[in-house]
Structure formats: C-alpha cells, structure tokens
Image (cartoon, rainbow, N blue to C red; front, side, top):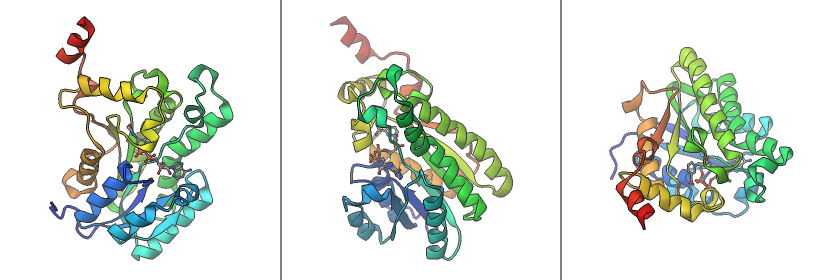
Amino acid sequence: MSHNLLKGKKGIIFGALDEKSIAWKTALRCHEEGAELLLTNAPVAMRMGEIKKLAEAVNAPVVPCDVSSNEDVDKLIEEAMKHFGGGVDFILHSIGMSINVRKGIGYTENNYEFTHKGFDISALSLHRVLASAMKQDAINEWGSVVALSYIAAQRVFPDYNDMADNKAILESIARNFGYQYGVKKHVRVNTVSQSPTKTTAGSGVKGFDGFINYAEKMSPLGNATADDCANYCVTLFSDMTKMVTMQNLFHDGGFSYTGVTQAVIEQMEK
Ligand SMILES: NC(=O)c1ccc[n+]([C@@H]2O[C@H](COP(=O)([O-])OP(=O)(O)OC[C@H]3O[C@@H](n4cnc5c(N)ncnc54)[C@H](O)[C@@H]3O)[C@@H](O)[C@H]2O)c1
C-alpha cells in the first residue's frame, strides 16, 4: 500500500544484489511510495545480471560503481545528477563485505590486506560517497542518507569478525559527517542497525542459523525482516523524520535493550 511518502523525491540505492537484499526490498518500497530511483552496485556483482530485473520493476537506470574507488564514486554521483537534472533527496548505503569472513579467517588471525579492503568497502565508502556528494553539491536541502549497520558495533558477536570494527566506524562516520552535512545543508545522516536477516551477506557469517534463531528468541517482537527494514528506510527518507540525524537507530524488534527473555530462560533450563 502506498502513502506517497516519497512522491517527487529522487534517490540512489547502493547494494541490491538479488531479491533477498535489503537494498532490493527498499528500492521496491521507495518506488511504491513515489520516488524516482537510480540503482548501483559493484561491476562484479552486476555481472550476475539480477539487478536488471529490479531496474525494470522500478523503472531505474543502473550505474556500475565500486565504492572502494574514488573515481567510480565521483562518476556515479555525476551521472546521477545528470540523470535527475539536479540533486538527489536520499541515498541508501547497503554495502558490506569482509574477505576475512568469506575465507573463514578468524578475528585473531586476520589478514590485514583483507581487513583494509573490507574496511574500505564496508565503512570508508560511506565517507567517500558523502564527500563526493558534498563536493558536487549532489544532495538537496533536508536530504537523507541511511547506511545499514549491525549491533556487533556495540556488543561482541565473535563470528562477526572484522565486520564488527567496520560497523563501529561506519556508525562513527554517520555521526561525524552528519554533523558537517547538517550544518552545511541540513542533510541528515543515520545508520539503521538491523536484525540478522537471511541475505547473501548475512548468511556468509559463520553459525548464522544459530545466530538468527537466538536473536528471534531474544527479541520481544521477533526479528525484523528485510521488508520491515525497507519500510523503516522509507520513513527515514521521508519528510516525517526530518529532524533525525547522526543517530544509530536500532531496528531489531527490541533485541538491543533486552537482557533476557522467557524463551531463552526456558531453553537454558532444558
Ligand atoms: N543480513 C544481515 O543479517 C544484516 C544485518 C544487519 C546489517 N546488514 C547490513 O545490510 C547491508 C546490506 O546487506 P544485505 O544483508 O542486504 O546483503 P547483500 O549481500 O544482498 O548486500 C551487500 C551488497 O554489498 C555490495 N558490495 C560489496 N562490495 C561492493 C563494492 N566494492 N562496491 C559496491 N558494492 C559492493 C554487494 O554487491 C551487495 O549488493 C550491509 O551493510 C550489511 O552489513 C545486514
């Protein structure tokens, strides 16, 4: 159901890989709410061709961009401005990648070349996108930028590995750039800390099934799905939340503030 919350707004969506992706669901919801979109992903991810289906469904162009390249990001922002004939109103940063996680290298044995690459893609890329947008004056007054995070930024989840450090820095960049962009142009920047969700990136974390079941039992409302997350992002891109900035917003069914639940106690007593 559409409420026209994003009617007349233009946005860039990073990170739609396949129909399970949080970015994919968010693009569909933004389109339903009346937004015009431009989609982007890493050239290597686009070779799978899935994104073309989404592009057709939301009537959006697709521009390749490796977010670890300054040149690619500058070109993407330039293309977006050309396509929309001016600035954008919102950006979704839905990007995460750790080579250490992918290769099963534990936190205490991390390969620092892999750590650097993962940091560049998962965290520094938010700074790069915001800096490029600021330089090219590509985000309209009261625009909204959302990046996706995870509670491993605050609490230890051992198998989340170096992604925990990446998320801590991602949230810090949202705060610090949020200050600068707020003062300069009333642009707001927030992170959404999402429940574990069955996607390609999520399922890559060791022990993910145990992890997602535990979170489900530890959340009074249960885990938030990718569709729930898409709805939340829509509200953050809308004018209804225009005074919210520099926040890390937990979207996790109450997990972050729950010490223990009856369901977990019962499980422990078995
Ligand atoms: N799935 C979860 O459990 C969960 C929970 C909390 C937060 N998140 C976060 O949500 C975001 C989206 O992940 P998802 O779960 O939808 O998984 P996903 O695998 O569908 O999305 C990750 C995206 O990052 C893109 N990416 C990787 N390297 C890139 C590069 N160099 N340049 C541009 N894009 C690149 C991938 O192509 C992919 O589209 C990530 O930031 C992830 O950490 C996921």
